[in-house]
Length: 73
Image 1 (cartoon, helix red, strand yellow):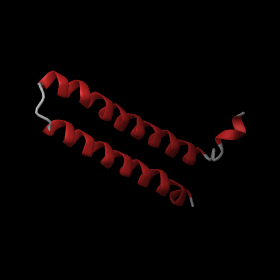
Image 2: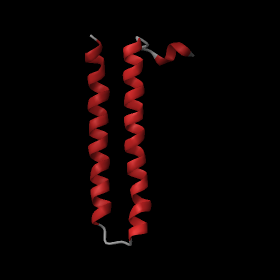
Image 3: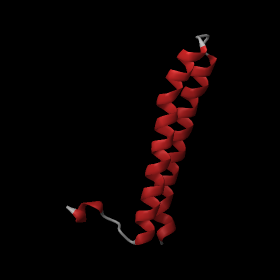
Image 4: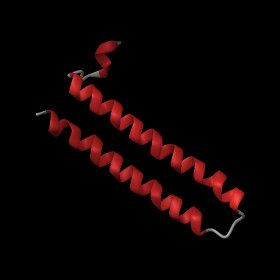
């Protein structure tokens, strides 16, 4: 039962990571100086990291049985 609840966050995170990787590939192909590319790569790479962190947090919530975050408030 818990596996079914993990499917949607996993799919959304995979789609987000693929989306941001297209940005990374686009930034790499731009003929700019290296320091400009590095600065522009920080945003999508940061967002990929945040997406994966949120996925891990959500999986931990599902495994612990805490389904509704609103019950805390």
